[in-house]
Image (cartoon, rainbow, N blue to C red):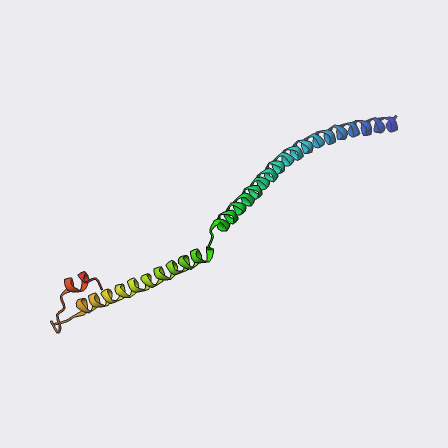
Length: 125
């Protein structure tokens, strides 16, 4: 009798394990289907981005090829950049000279040498 009882208990335990495995399998199927859906959406988004990048590349290439003398355009662009760099250097030098003059005025003691501050600030260069 105890062998039959042990076998029936093992059979019940195996039935419970079987239902537990079926439940876990259902949960895993649900999770994997959601992961697959998310990955499919991500894959479609990456494909759309690649397609958009390809079309932008084509449009840029087409636009550049329509400029008959592109070297002239690039030379003008580089010249403009150089002019802006030189202008910024001139403005920085002007700022440094103005600050130096203001520091000289502020640090002037006992009226040794007077400089008109408005003349220093308002002069263009």
